[in-house]
Image (cartoon, rainbow, N blue to C red; front, side):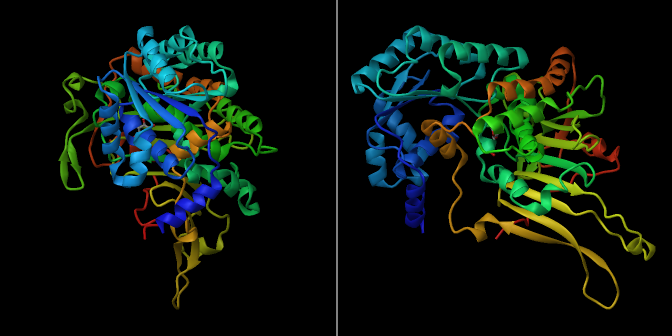
Length: 505
Ligand code: BG6
């Protein structure tokens, strides 16, 4: 099965033109470990990266090339086969360095010159956002943005800046070194298969698009919940919190893909413009002028999968007095003809009851009196787009319950990737590295949509920054503090709890 799958993907993904050097800055960080290095290894296994590629990792930790190879081996060992590994490991190199110091880039340059003459360069910046400007300036100082015989692409991870002003500065500095079409800003949720499917699902099915508006939709909910805590990322996480970590990027991009207008073609530029236009129509999220529209939580200790887990403030000594929110619930509105007045509820956080990401479209109750007159309760249809895990789409419909009497019941009609397509989904990081190398910017947010999304949350950041705002504590393993439920109760609504049963075979 696995062999077949990899063959299929080989046919589908074209090899990236060698020789290729990937410069991975932040090579020993959490993201490199969890996502980037496994994705690069998988691309190598699938033949997308040829033997004529090399990866030079750079991070502070002192390591030799051999030690770095051992380090990567441990990361990819669950997916490794001996033959693949021995070929792959020969392409791994390491420079220990300080990303703020130009001397380190001299060593990186030296290491690269010794390895190979000339080719394509892919820079992947997976480090703390506060280091981005130093990275860009050092690359410029050492003229590393150029390659005499190939292309250079510059990939960087969200969050892009820490607020609107810093993201504008970052964009300006980036454009002094690279052209816009060399810059690939990564928001990996845009590359999740079910998010990519939104365009096809909405615009390729005549039955949905004409219902996709305020006349038929009662409310929209987006949940990105994780059981995981902050792992060893105390320093990183405490400096950004849930708003910068997932709302400014993943949640707003998911929302955009769900609600934006139909593009006239599939050109990346057209899609980017539509994304940006939608984001500019979102009302800003301001806890001061709209109290109660956004509430913050922080996890306390609790039980998850039968195990006692620590409170956020117990995760590291420096967090003992932290006010950083680890969860958020918010209500947003869109200033557009199509969506005016339709509430959007967002919820995200760490150490919540389930690890699940989904979008639900709650349709309005049908307008008819006949069932009501007979005391039969009917509910509006509910469409759930399950992003992960168990990817799929479920539409809940009302049917007559079998029996002698007339009773109504809501039943699911579901499409599941797992059962429908006999192939695995292309993992988001593999897709993005591949697309960047092949020069397809469709799934990458652009400077203007990023700035538009910072604008939406800037008042929230100012509010959190300014005062002594205690987030509401919630028990790890719960669905957040009571204030999350209250936010919807005020509108006579409730959160639609993700069903663990969706596409779960
Ligand atoms: C990252 C966030 O962007 O997304 C993490 O920084 C979060 O805090 C992660 O855990 C979730 O992504 P995925 O794909 O692992 O669900």
